[in-house]
Every structure is written in structure tokens, then in C-alpha cells.
Image 1: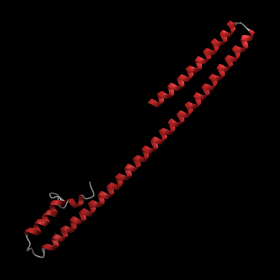
Image 2: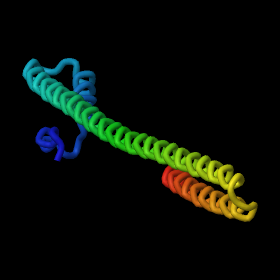
Image 3: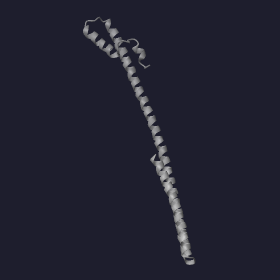
Image 4: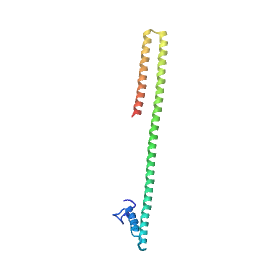
Length: 160
């Protein structure tokens, strides 16, 4: 039930606007009315003014409640966006760190393989050097596969 329901129970068939217009019509149609009718009209006007005042207060209160609810919802949305943004930021930092680590390991592996090849060229046959290069290439391929999985895994997470 609304806050103005008790006042509308007095005149259930006529809305407030028709009651006010009825007062105006009565006063206009009967300009020579007795002074005894004047207090009745004043009482009706005060009742209408009281109803309007209550209606204005209810509208203001309702507007304040709506404003507060909207503000609360906006605050919750902002908190959710910040939380998700922090999660994405952490994931990107972790991915960047992992990628740097894998690149460093790959560079060290290639450098070690080249050093072994150079050392072996002086001491052993060409076949031994080729075997070392094949193993270095296999290690490089495995490192590249690890990097590919890291990058595609993180980009899949960002796309969803």
C-alpha cells in the first residue's frame, strides 16, 4: 500500500484532481453561497494541500532511495571491474615473467650447444658435431613448444 492510501479512502470514487476541480466548479457556479460553505471549502483545500504535501514528500523519499540504490549498484560494478582488472594484470605479469624465463633458458641452451659444437669440432669427427646440433635443435624445439603453449594458453584465457 502507498503512503497516501489512508487519505484516498475518504473519497474512493473521485481522484484528488476531480475533487479540486469540483471545489472550483462549486465556487464558480454558486457565487452567492453562504459563508457557512466557506469553512467546508477551506477544509477541503487544506486536505488537498496536505495530500499534495504527503505526495511530494513520498516522491522525494522515493527519489532518494532510487539514487542510493543506483549509487550502491554502481559501486559494486566498479569493485567487480577493479577485481577483474587486477586479475588480468597479474596474469599478464606472470605470463611475461614466464616468457622471459623460457627465453633465457632457450638462449642458454643454444649457447651451450654452440659451445659444445665448437669444442667437438676440434676434437671429434663431423658426425659427432652433427649429433650435438641435432640434440640442440631438439632442445630448442621443446623450448619453442613450451613458449607456444604458454602464449596460446594465456591468450585463450584473455579471449573468454
